Image (cartoon, rainbow, N blue to C red; front, top):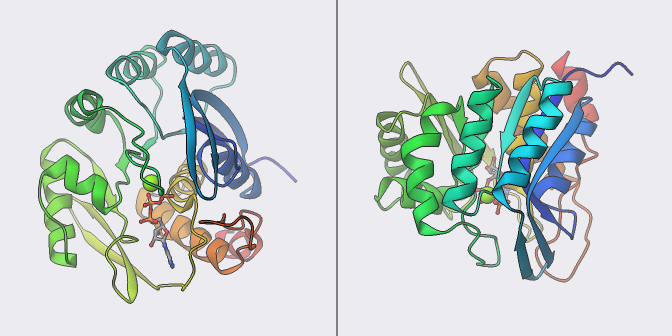
Length: 270
Ligand SMILES: Nc1ncnc2c1ncn2[C@@H]1O[C@H](COP(=O)(O)OP(=O)(O)OP(=O)(O)O)[C@@H](O)[C@H]1O
Ligand SMILES: [Mg+2]
């Protein structure tokens, strides 16, 4: 099999393998691309929650990004967990220095079990400086609420939040609907020209650990392969949906999804 593209992941490690860097590598690999990593933090966690988090120093995160990308230039980048102001700033600096393009930002803030993954000052820097440097931001509803300071309880609220994110300088926004509590899952894609709602039936399961990480790395992969950002969102959502459908039943808490389930997509992708 010929490798389709090279993707750099800047994110935290999830020891349980369902989310974080581990989910990203599995997603990118199963979609036929080559994954590279800059680890921002190491978490000890399982499907029931996060036990501990060790942050990697910002200089070392930049070293990973720069040393890796100078040698193998990524076709696109996925950014996940960035825990501190220092880390956000040094990631921005490295992206600028290497003129890296095609960036997807998943503004990870809180883990499914409730553990906080970013400090408040870092959220402000992310909002002020990073959002405008990326091609797409993919907040879930609680993250969109924090970034826009509005309460989101409906599709209309999601659209309004997305517009506020565009005003903050975002080029494209995908607000994920997993937290809305409705029968259908509505993910809303917005840019200055269009609004598209991707709707799927909600699958009844607690095994959705890592859906957000998986989605952003799938989108980054399709985008790195040359699809438009909108098409990449559509295909990424379909990949996650299939992965939830074929989920294994691992762990006693919120179990992982099935990253190997890429073959149906593969045919349609061509
Ligand atoms: N039960 C479900 N059935 C179908 N699709 C789902 C379900 N839960 C989440 N999704 C989809 O998974 C994707 C990720 O959305 P979600 O809102 O769960 O992200 P997230 O909160 O960032 O996830 P994470 O907790 O992994 O960070 C979206 O496309 C969403 O529609
Ligand atoms: Mg998330």
